[in-house]
Length: 71
Image: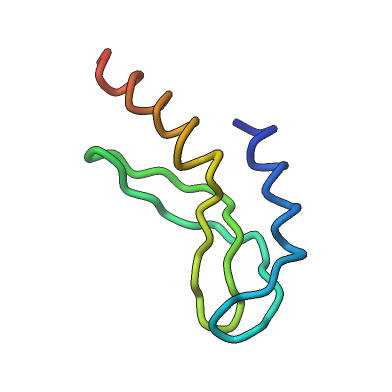
């Protein structure tokens, strides 16, 4: 997971679509299937909009879902 979070640094070169500021990695609380996780995700320092990278939404969350189902 650390490698995935490290890969999110590339999104800090992206601009917020709402206000044009560059995104920064910020601790973000995510709730998924009744569990809460804190991750460093790209977010706008001005308006707070959080960008959820596709690799997190499709790959890692599927892994998390499988782990939670096994519990």
